[in-house]
Length: 273
Length: 259
Image (cartoon, rainbow over all chains, first blue to last red; front, top):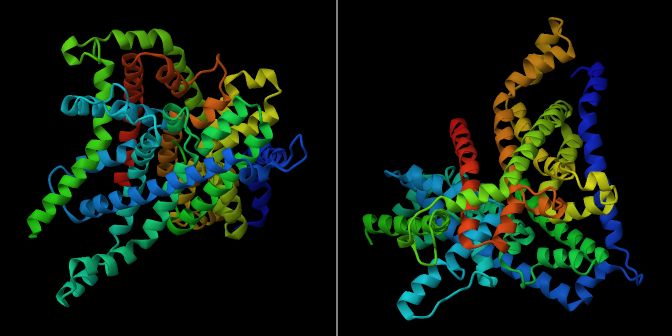
């Protein structure tokens, strides 16, 4: 490292620094300040606990995200392990399909759920043909659940597969030769070995679900998940302080979750959806 | 259960997951080219919905491409030097700065958009132009470029190469352009694909930052989902898929090359 290079390095770093301070740091600080000020003078950060609507929305979003995370982890671990351990014709195609939706925006995923479970959706059509009764759940919490699952599965599968490829097969074989049951092998060897991957991808999945706006925007016009609450507070109620404080809380939650994920897996993952 | 049954059960499960992901895409493509989706495919195929979408929403496609290309250029110009400086300086400071640069990915787009509107919403000319959306896109995609280039730079000892060149009299800028950039090529390529794809599909920030005059493709999509008949919405989604799938394929190929 040459000492006299520093002025030039500074020049190289300047554009990004200016851009970032102007359009991210200053606005985010302002958002935090506004979030803490209210016309009444009471800090609106407290509104998350005080206002039943905000509190319920926070709890509903947390519950939904946790449910999605657990389901996505189970489905993706089963599928990911299977794909890592078996080589068969068509495996590559399956793998491409499973990771394809990675960059689909949330709005599009919302629409795909409408195709599946909306008023003119496949499930409605099948149930009508079978029972004469149309089942439509795209616009409910269940619809959101499937939407979030849709964009979570590809992300989780990728991380799980990356971890599973490093598994030491000899441990399993040793356990098997000592007479361990498949259940014990899964619980005592495979799950502990996958743990970093599970925690990392679980955190990613949780953060993505907490902040998902596009899917909720397409599906859940009358369900209060946190991003929708922020959106309606801002646009319909013009409650800028409330929207700001809720955004900061949401941002903190997702940042902490992703920070954990990154320090465990060392990769950048987008919160879209 | 013998090995074969276990294999088949697992395969069945994987296929089930795949169909959950694929069937809706297939249905939406089908609806986009069907006369009347409610009646079914027996009503016949047509390109009329696609034509209708092109009549109504071509502007959104152009604007999305314009923003994605400009966004890519900006992230290249400010992102690559940033990654290089981070790699050169190294250590704790560099890691903290990296963590800050990655923040816009960890914080939901809604919050960033809100912050931008609160501060810059008053500048009318800026607020109503597509540059306002561009700022959001650059913030959101920059981390991917920086991280992608940084990953390549940390994987080989570029400082040694640079020292060699410097001892032969190469200036800082010669070294930057003839050693650092060519060697970081794979990271720059992967980052570029990522930035472009993310920018084309970005909705969370864009929905808040757009105005009726500056609608991007995903904003138009949300618009059509809310107000158009299913066939038009599907045809529009089909056009979006046609645009984005080559990019996704490119990314899959790149990551395969790496392995």
